[in-house]
Length: 620
Ligand SMILES: CSCC[C@H](NC=O)C(=O)N[C@@H](C)C(=O)O
Image 1: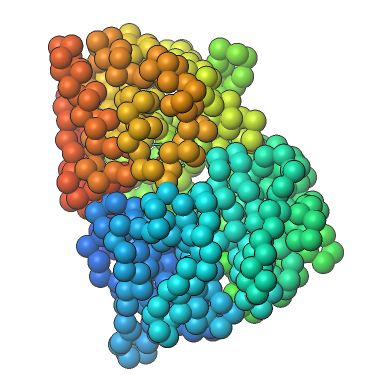
Image 2: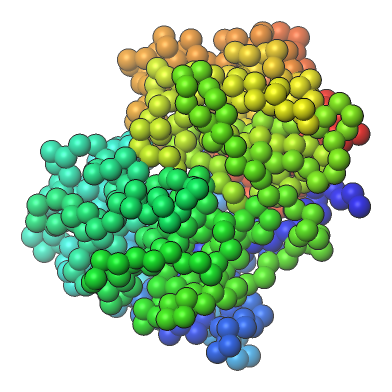
C-alpha cells in the first residue's frame, strides 16, 4: 500500500508532560489538531487516561508548558509565525474540564511582541514567577518578576548577555541564573534578592557546561562536565562554587552498554531523597533511579528503549512522569510507579491508521574517517527489497552543530523509507552526546573537518552492496543546511541531489544578520567577524556555488530569527547564475522551524517529489 506524505503527517505526538500538584491530571503538548497546543487528561486510578481536553487554541504552536507548584495553573509559551519571540500565557484551573465541568481561562501575561521572554521559575506559592527578557535592548536578558494577581511585571536587575533563571530558592530570597556564553561555556550566578548581592559561582573555574539545575530542600543538584568529559551528577556548594561529584557518567557505562555517552536529564524528588537521570548512550536514553541518601543507583528496565524527555517527579515522590519515543513509536506520555518500577503508557498518539509494523528502526554503525576516528551513524534500510541497482540513499545531516541525531520517531525518515530510500544519519564531530571534547572538534578553524566526515560517510555507503552509489542525496536543515551546501561544493562529485532547509550559505552575512542576542554565542562556535573574516569567507559555500553539480532544493521561512531568509536567497541566485538547477520555496508564516501542518505537508511533499524526480525513488 502506498501513502503520500500528508498521511504520514497525520501521525501525532504527546510531549512535555506536567503532573498536576494533586497527581490526578497530566497536562502535555500534542499536535492532535495538527499543531502543538496544550492539552490535559485525567489519570484514573487504574492508570487509564480519560479523553484529553484541549487547553489552548492558537494558530501558532505552543513551545513549552510549565506547571505551577500550588494550583492547577499552567504557563504556556508561544510565539508568532515562528519569530521565536516567546510570549507567556497563563492557563487557569486546567483541571476544571474533568468530570464534565468545562471552564478554564487562557490569559496573556507578556505584552511586548518584539521581546523574547524566557521562563525561569515559580515562587513557592505559585503566585509569582521570574523570567528574563531582552526587552531593554534586544541583546541583553534582564531579570523580571511577574505577579499573577496584578498581572504586572517589573525589572529586578539589568544583566548582560544571554542570562536565564534556572532556580529560585531559600524561601524565594535567592535566584540561581546562568549566562550561556558559548555551548561549552556556561557561567553560574547566585543573586540574593534581599541584599542585591550577586556572586559569580563559577569564577576561576575551567569553562564547563552546567545543566538540569535543581534546587531542592536547600541543596542544589546539577549535571556538569567540569569534572569529567561526559558529565557527572553533582551537588553545588553555593558558598564556594565547588562541585561535589555524586555519580560520574563512566560509572554507568557498563549498565548502558553497548551504548556509551553522557548524562542528559535530571529530576530530583521534592523530598530530596532520590533523583532520576538519563544517560544518553549513542542517542538512546537509559533511565536510572538514584538514592541520594545511600548513594545507590539502579537502571529502569521496564520502559521500551528509546529517547526520553521531560522527567518530573510527582509531589509525593512516588511517581515519575516522562515522554518517550523510539524510531518506531511517536512520543507519548508514560508514568512510572517507583515502588514497583511499573511503567504505564498514558497517552496513545494517533498513527494515522498506518501499521506500526511498517516502521523501520535503524542499525547503529560506526564508519572510519580521515583522522582514525569512528563516526557513529544510524543506517535505515527500507523494508522492501532493493532495486537491482541498489537503494537510493539520503545522507541526512543534523543541525546544531551542537546537536545530535537520536533514535527517535522521525516521520520524514519513515516516509522516505516507505518510498524505498535508505538513510544514513551520522553524528559527525561537533555533535553532542559523546562528551565535551567531541562536541568541540568542529569549532572555528576545524569546520571543514566535519564536512570531511560526510565524505567518509559516502565512502562507507559506496562499500554497501545494497546502496546505489550513483543515487546518494544529501539533506539537512539549519546548520545541517550549511553542511549540505558545504558538501555539494567541497565534494560535488559525490551527490545526485541536495536539499538545504533554512541553511547557512555565507558565514559573513549570517553572522552580520542573525539576531543580535545570539551573535556572540554563535561566533564562539564559528569564529568572529573581527578575527576570522577571511577564514569564514574561505569556507562559505556561497563563493563556490559554481562548483555545485547536483540539483538543489532550497526551503526557508521568512521570519527566521536564526538563519535569515537572505542566506537562502543568495545561494539560489548564485546557483542559477552559474547555470545550476535549483528549486526555491519559502513560507511567509514560518521561521526557523516549519510548524503549521499545511506548510509541513507542502515542504515535505516537495522534498519527496524532488528526490523521486532526481533519484527515481524505489521505482528508479
Ligand atoms: C544555539 S542554537 C543552535 C542550533 C540551531 N539549530 C539548527 O541547526 C541553530 O540555529 N543552528 C545554526 C543555524 C546557528 O548556529 O545559528
